[in-house]
Length: 171
Image 1 (tube, rainbow, N blue to C red):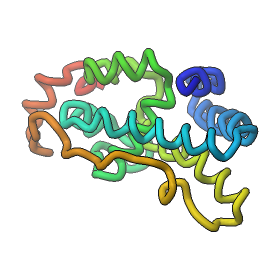
Image 2: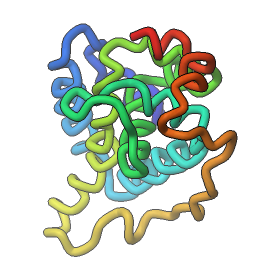
Image 3: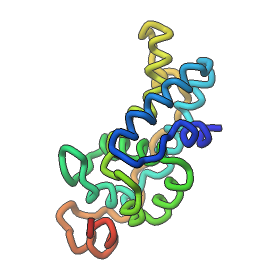
Image 4: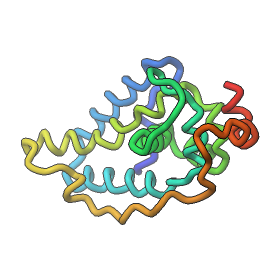
């Protein structure tokens, strides 16, 4: 159900404006969800985000430029990136998390760093319904976030990026 929702609300990423259409479609669909379903959506999203907290994926996110700010990817931006990657659907998510260099093949990958809207869509709707009494972050079940796994690269180790992510580095 979770993946089907994200995929059914996606217009396909043919232009930069596709993200706006996707978010609008998702908000429309989620507005029909009960509070319990919104909590479940939010919890699943975070469970998936936390499951791919790896330096390998972060390295690919680091070298894909942000639309406005260029290359780089801080802690919060990496959470947004993973949320954006999830929003592209299960097939894209699995492909890129298994081989982060395939991020080079994702259309408009620079928009992935703006992915928080997808995870907070449910929270926004919930807060509107309850007049900002409480956010889903305060009530949704969530496992403790584990430390980032894998090899910790250095931000200026261009040889590492070139060797590890040749397709991404070439973009």
